[in-house]
Image 1: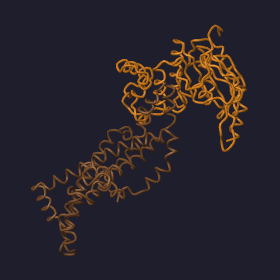
Image 2: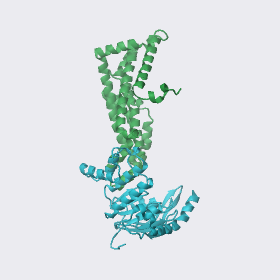
Image 3: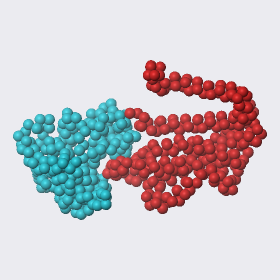
Image 4: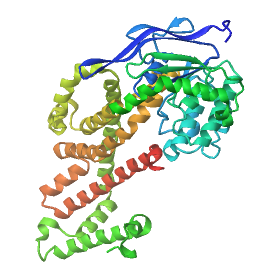
Length: 265
Length: 262
């Protein structure tokens, strides 16, 4: 971890609560976290620990009650258009075909039609959906929609990716392929990634650092470096000895809250 | 009853359905012809043969085209005007919570009025000609389109709006790329109801004042105890309404193609 890379996304003592049935429901408590350029940070934690809220704060869709969120040194006090956000639900516009959904951010940026089509075709290749370009989202499987959603974000090359369980609906094989694809992309660019998941294995395979959030209200229980070599062979990574150790460390932190979460539901 | 001949899938589409429909219509016409003069006095219901004769007469002497053109023009202009106004007002009020709160009671009060009751006032304001009928049709259409557009704009999924905001969309882009396309589903609900009501506005206007249009033709026939004329006028209105409706349904099929392909 070279300290020469500058901080890009910083949370300083951030609290966030939501109004619920007349009271304030605290969701995040005292979150302090910094991502430097090219960091790949995964956030894990039980349901309701405020993982998605963290991303909404980074995207400027929510404001903290206390503390400050900075992007590239500036407080995030409006929608953060420097990030690409792949949210938990795919958010594809149902009236647009696959190619037009992927072209959407390019249209918004005023990229000429010819160039747009070229970039879209290229992305459709990346996600392996040749032959589905002229389908509507309702005609695709959940996994396919997730891939389109990812393509729609990657196509405009945001400097920072906020990803909310982007691969949760994919089958195991496809998920491994998407992991490899995401790492390939990340390794070739200056991309910074904040990746929310509740899959510990996924977190370890992908990230430099894993943040463990507690059950609600979410606070940081552990910040664990993933000292595994890159590039990582994602498909047979589980057999790595250090992988098992890291998994044990993280699981030890998360299991009590996870069990409490089950008891609470 | 689930034999091959009765499966709903077989009658569901295409030529068999069309044939069955035509058969039902033919049966009703035969029934009408049969009842007239035997069960019911033709003074009240005339009969299909006389109605067809009347339509043939009107079409050869030019009455049909003259009056049809008038009504068509009024209803069409009213429809376009009311739709444009209703959509604009619906989007504007849907987007601004403040304006909506400000105008809500006024809008409710005006909307609860049967618009047809405004006809005499419109005669005073706009005279007895084309303008009055167009405005009357437009005012009826306006509220249907307004309500459905407003519902559509309020119904826009905030997730879509947020996704586009993060992509750096301007307000105008949010409107054209999310809010309007999303509201179209609702808008078509309003448009389908509006079509017969545009015709209603035009015909009521003609019944009230003026010297032309299918409504005028109806009134004139009634005043002369001319039942075949009345029935012929009603048949023309039905055909007109069905034709209008077909246009809206077809355009919906094109615009909302994403809804029907899955």
